[in-house]
Image (cartoon, rainbow, N blue to C red):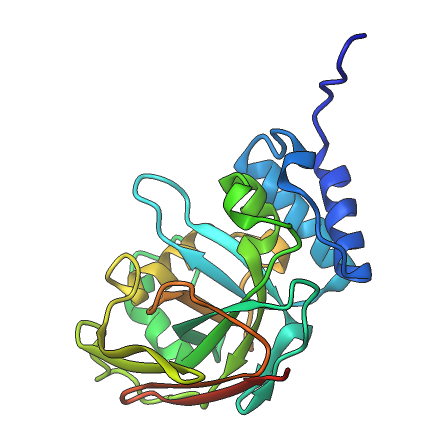
Length: 255
């Protein structure tokens, strides 16, 4: 008997992820085979899922040396202000990432503007954020990087703090933060944004996002990477966080 080696199309991947979001099931990474086959296919999956659950409330991103930025939409329906109550998940656990976000407050300059990095400063506010990490997969460790990307880079929503409009004196090179997960303090002191430069990461997204998932628009939030790794929490955990000079965040994950 000849084994069927047909690769899943982006539409087929998207339909499976849409169904998993709707009915709460989780999918085996192995069941996707080697799909998606490219970054473009993974982004096509994201766009299809967003059509079903959108609009986007923002994007998570990261800089990759010599490559386009990582881009993953965050559903607007899954963005909530602090203090927040986190919804239960089929797996019974979530991961928490404390991050620096950029809230777009005005139309951004053109992606090819040579003065983009300077002009864009007047178009955003800083905002402290908890990223809720969740996946539609049974085992994110077993998933390929492209499958994680197709699954919105494992995003499960945001908890947002108070925007800081006057942020020009904020020192990204001297970030101090604290994150308490129940009785455990997982971060207390100096912290570093992945890639070392949150503003450069944001600007790389502005240059690279184009019209993907509607593009980057006023009112959306861009998150720049975890300050504390990706620790998981169990139901019954209280989350308390602060980024010095930026603000506090609270979320409860009920038992």
